Amino acid sequence: MTCARAACLIAAAAVAPALAQAPQKVDASKSYIRFVSKQMNVPVEGRFRRFEGTVAFDPAKPEATRAELEIDLASIDLGNEEGETEARRPLWFDVARFPRARFVTSSVRAVGAGKYEASGALTIKGITRDVAAPLTLTESAGLRIVEGQLPIKRLQFKVGEGHWSDIETVADEVVVRFRFTIPATR
Amino acid sequence: MTGRSEAYGSAAIAMHWATALLIVGDFAFGLYFIDLPLSPQKLRYFAWHKWAGALVLLTGAGLLAARWLRAPPSLPASMPHWEKRLSRLTQVILYLLLVLAPLSGWLYSSAAGFQTVLFGVLPIPDVVGRDRGLAEALRTLHRGINYTLAAVVAIHALAALKHRFVDRDEVLAYMLPFLRKP
Image 1 (spheres, chains in turn brown, orange):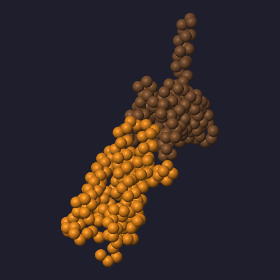
Image 2 (image 1 turned 90 degrees about the horizontal axis):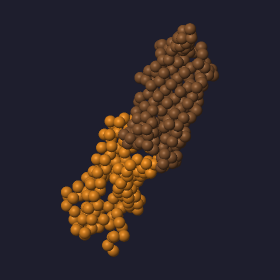
Image 3 (image 1 turned 60 degrees about the vertical axis):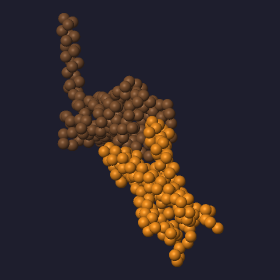
Image 4 (image 1 turned 135 degrees about the vertical axis):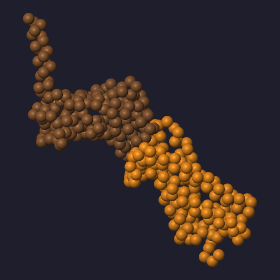
């Protein structure tokens, strides 16, 4: 019967990813997403307090890695209320319309021992761009720690519009530094 | 009165008026821009405000050095003892606040996450880390110190005017030699 074949296909589809690698939840308490931008040549640091992600990673098949990440942009921490309020407004992240930024991997390839190059699609404020970041992977005490940094141009995502697009006061380049901790599985 | 002259030296006079301009100007400027909505212009104003504050430390130190190199003129013998003491006390408090005002601003800025980079080129290290609670406290302290400074500056200026128009002595002319009676 065709019905039986369909059921079999569905079962196979459900089992196949599990065999490859089950997605692991990022442990946010042992992870961070920080960024540094320059204001009038002065480095100013910030971070996002809330984000969540899943990573399906098999050291034997890094190219099959699938990672997804969502960042709650309203959780921005700049160390001062005035800056944070401004960052949530329409000219910056416009969190009322675009509450989350999203990153989805498209490919991961090994470039050396514990070193990888990840690329994927980053969506901020409804604008999606392909980005690539070098990663390092370390394992200790049953945890996998992925670290890396990603320089992005804020104006490509319309982060800081209108008078804020003046890059003399707030530079276009923002370096995002991140660390994600996931349970190690074999 | 041996070794004492009838006016401050020209270095002390220059430093005094430079300091006066800077603190009156930067105080008024701070009052004006602090409640503006955040904008690139406001970020620039913050930087200028901090640079002017750093200059106050320099001119204030210059003024102290000039006083030390050449003793200030002595106060008129006609002044009552308590007035002389009050005058000295006011000046000591002024010097203290001249240091504390920029210092508290610098610490506040560091605690709020903004390093001070003089004229955009010379980084002043942060001695306190980013800390929201500390930033709030330092902001209140910076404001308190500057309102106190404004009050003491007003007393200092009113006293100088009293010397000129009530006591009709030469004390104001110590700092403004062109006022000196022939």
